[in-house]
Image (cartoon, rainbow, N blue to C red; front, side):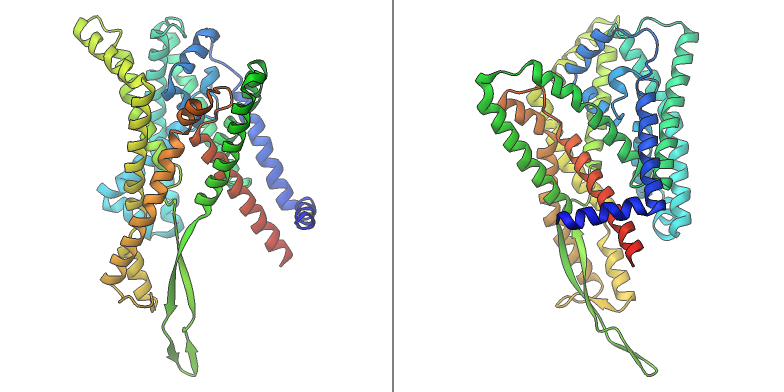
Length: 424
């Protein structure tokens, strides 16, 4: 195994194109981290840290901003407007048949136009998010009261920073290795590790050594589980019927159709986060209202959502439901059955057409249950670890862990593919 590893490393350094792509990826990540260190003016750092520590929702948003929100940098929104616009566009394919046809039937050109519309939509979403967050932070004393000119300037700067990060991510996808948006989020998560290690070192207590060991074992088991579920798939056997064309006999081969256990990836967690985040933001904003009954009701909602158990239960249920919802959007058994029938393929023991569609639908429903439970547990993983070990310094979120593992696996696969092409 070590010999194979060193051989691949040698191939990577010898291949000029692959080496250039990897260096471009690292260079783009360095530029992003430098931008994430430039804060907007007038921040109360101590108040900001306390506010984020007491707010689970904004702490999770910090994950998707690539760590830029924790310092209120000029790229504090990160790629979250782009992710939100992509989710909205995916949902719009259900309501607008033309968008669904563009995305699924027009090939690469249609997908490129679809992604371009997502980029256009991310601009107004970035403006709205920038305005909402500045008002929220002003109410909590983190950002000083701004004049109209200062408010507009900050909104423009934050929106421009989000568009810049989106552009960097697109460049990384085109000229680097892996998905640029995922790599930006990955960089923000990894950048938080030194701070977590420092907190752990300062709060280290020999009396809690058994708890630390239990946490380390649990972390390794969870990481292995993430890799296993992320790579797990259910193979469906497929056979191509024999066809005679002239003097040639075509078909007759057997293959399989891979159905992934975790079809939805990390998208359901993002959906659930969005649905939990905005009511909390609105309630926090209304809690400072001059209308007594409105402020009291909003404060009660904020206190209710801030409860760890309420938050955990709601988060788990939403992730579970959204996993089924997103899988139903992206996986269409009827289309797969129709394509198999057109190409002369069939599943042994299952009639082509409607029976094949029902068969695939039943299988995807069963295996999605495993993926939904997995994502739900992963979402509330920090709460479980804190309850068992009592350690808060190194409890990396389940969402962050899923992103880190998925990005590493994706980059390794793409590097393996490039090295294999070179060898052949």
